[in-house]
Amino acid sequence: MSYYRVTVKPNESADAWRTFLARGIIAIGYGDNDPVVLRFRQISPGDYVFAHVPESHGGGPCLIRAVGLVIGGYQEVRRNMIPAEDNWNGNGDVRRQIPVQWLHVQDHSMSGSRMYWRGTVYKLSSEEQQLLRELFGL
Image (cartoon, rainbow, N blue to C red):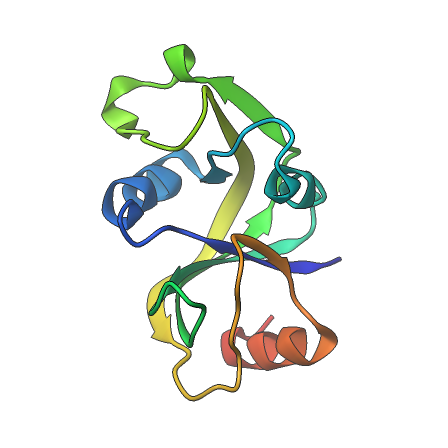
């Protein structure tokens, strides 16, 4: 079991977040060969994901929107197969998504936590995992 932080971009967060909750997914929109996609594909059933909105674009203290348990494998959904009500505006022609069961859905500020995360998909260190397990009772 691993723990990952996946960023919900601030400029897309409202629409994307509503879709993630309604569909039971976490998703990114990157091109086929992007290293972010390779990291995202490593997330497996039984892992935990922390949906995150950065407070700054340079990587800073964060806001955790929710914690989810991964319940399925990586999926690619072509843009023309995405329901219009999803308002998907991610990059590329494919929404890369992973099914999750959202366990804790409540904004939780991580300001002052010593955690400064950068990048869209990030595998948490042992120290970060321990802190978040304690915070969310995992």
